[in-house]
Image (cartoon, rainbow, N blue to C red; front, side, top):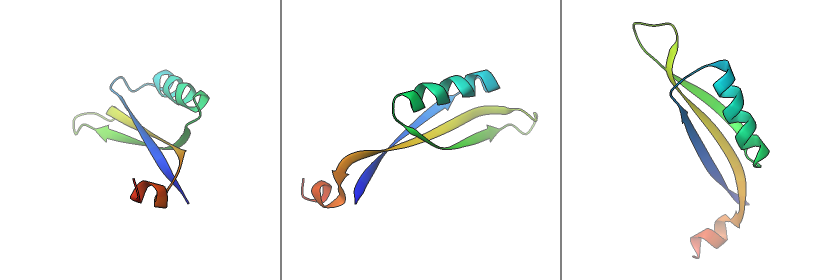
Length: 68
């Protein structure tokens, strides 16, 4: 079983253009989009930050990692 690597990108200027830019950039590097989480402010309906999560296989197995 492969052990996945994770990548989290923080976005402080949350716009559709910025989300598209970040997603397209990291997907083109071989990462797979896993999800987007938004941090909200009580005083606004717009998110103040977003965390975009990506995953990809590192190629190392769980057994190899445990033995290293």
